[in-house]
Amino acid sequence: MKNDCVFCAIAAGEIPSFKIYEDDSVLAFLDINPFSEGHTLVIPKEHYKNLLEVPPAVLAVLLERVQKVASHIAAALPCEGFNILQNNGAVAGQTVNHIHFHIVPRSEGSGLTFESGKGDMEKLGALASRLRLES
Ligand code: 5GP
Ligand code: ZN
Image 1 (tube, rainbow, N blue to C red):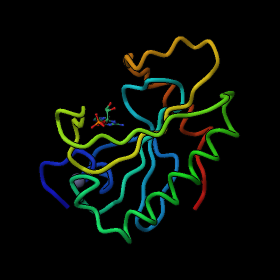
Image 2: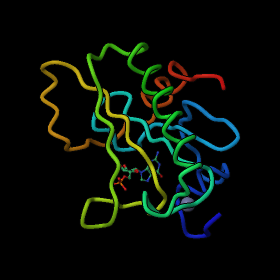
Image 3: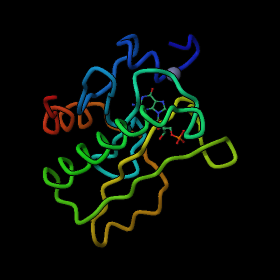
C-alpha cells in the first residue's frame, strides 16, 4: 500500500467507495465523477503505477475482471456498448497514479462528450447496490 495513494486507501477501506465487485486481488467501484451512468473503475488492490509497471500476471487477472464486470454492467444497464479507457501519465490524462481501467457505458444519442459531471452521492449509492456483483 502506498501512503499518499487514494486508490490504495479505497482498496484498504480507509476511503469509502461504491463497490461493484471485490475479490482477493481486484476491486471495482463507481467513478466519483462519472462520464456516464455506471462509469466504473477496476483496480488491482496492490499498488502499481501504470500499465508498464504492473506485472503481466497481475494484469492478466485484472483484465479478466474488467471483462467480467463490463459484461455484468452491459447486461444490467440500458446501454448498447461501452468504452474501456486506461490512461498512463499526466500528459495522457492520468490523475491517479495507481493503475486502473475505466468502464464507460455508452448509449445511442446520449451526447456523451467525455466531460464528466459531479456525481450525486444518493444516485451513486443506489446504483452501486443495483450493480453489486458477488465474487
Ligand atoms: P484517470 O484520469 O487517472 O485515468 O482517472 C482517475 C479517475 O478516478 C477519475 O475519473 C476520477 O473521477 C476518479 N476518482 C478520483 N478520486 C476518486 C475517489 O476518491 N473516488 C472515486 N470513486 N473515484 C475517484
Ligand atoms: Zn495505490
